[in-house]
Length: 566
Image (tube, rainbow, N blue to C red; front, side):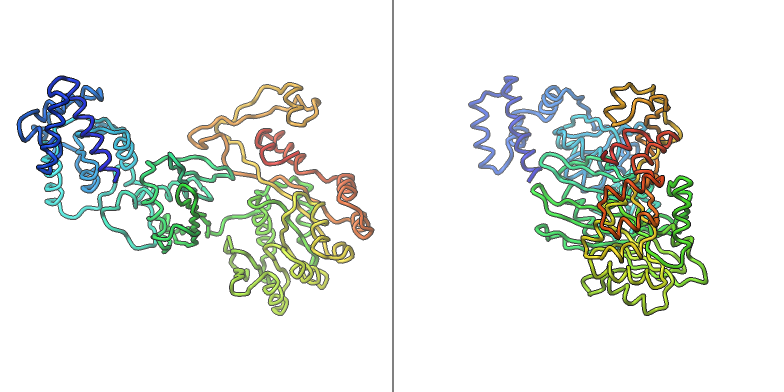
């Protein structure tokens, strides 16, 4: 459809240029158009075949109109042009032929230049593109010569110039599609390769009214990576759906799927796919799960020495409950995995219930929750209690049944680790009460509460000292003017980090349930009273913990205020 519209626009423009340059009158054009219709020809073909206007004249008019050069391609040597760069289908669909490649600059012949054409070739090849006008018949002959030359070479993979190196390291565990779609296949593969290389957690493929974009979530922040031509959106979506064994014809409802990507010989990534219909087309998100066992240690989490001691003391106890709170993506699971790694010895029986299992840990019995099959956190916990457990991790406490069972287990000689969605350590107590847990059970089972967020680390290669902030700037950040002497750093950006940050670190509230806090819980005191007591005992708030990271040159004020709302 788009090609037909472009041809109609092209013919209309040719007629206008011929008339404008007094080669044929308007009346004659109308008559010739009628004759062309009767002969089932285009106006341009009719004029050329009847020697009314030559192809050279039309090419020169177009070259002048678009301000691009005309090239006589009669003498082009097929052996000297980069004919492997573009697939046959692409050449015929866009009606172009490659002429010359100089470093990353590709010169193409066309008989009708458009912005869409240029952008699409740049997308497929990753090269800067310059167009030159050629006569239609000569261009057809050159495209046919290239096609015959490719046939003489035998079958080819048609790997795109810009994507060959990236795709060679990536193996997607699905059936290959046809050679005609090789460029789309290579592009999607290269996006996956790049996202894994940059340690992105998610890839967003988004269709809007006038453009299409791809974004990565890196270190918790979305960053735009590419804006392919919008007319390729459906083909990219179809390729991803094929990889995940989804129905490519179903665009009305969301779909979920998955596939595996082998990044290198020893690196496998599990990719979860969700497609969702929007008013402008389908949006697809790929979640990249790292199934490798990372080296999780307590030092990498971001605790200060006092917080680390509280954490180690709590997990050393034979019973009790440790709760880690924070929003989705705040690093709660990694903190719990750090505890499990320390507890994972031959003397302990450890079981976890997760939704889903994010990191595989050898020596630990990990269970994937499956609510559709009836396997809930509560049912998994009930099963664990019959298997002689020492330590149990529950991915999340969502309801009274799970909370009640976890608390009873913590009171009867088991160490329980779990998470909740609350904003602060003290608010966890209110959340448990709202689930229906009694103050006595809360006070007698909890040993440690942790609230946390993740802030991006400054890149050590390019971070810069920022001149001392003014009193007004400090007040904007909600800070006391007395700390103006602190050396603040700012993000710059370099080849190692792209945007000034690389990696993330935790900032925490760590609140041991002391005898004084136990008494406040038992007497039904509110969150403010409990928070006041925790601060009295030396607890840092999340924001104060973040300020420590700023003083150490680990992160910035802007990043802290992005993550933590004062």
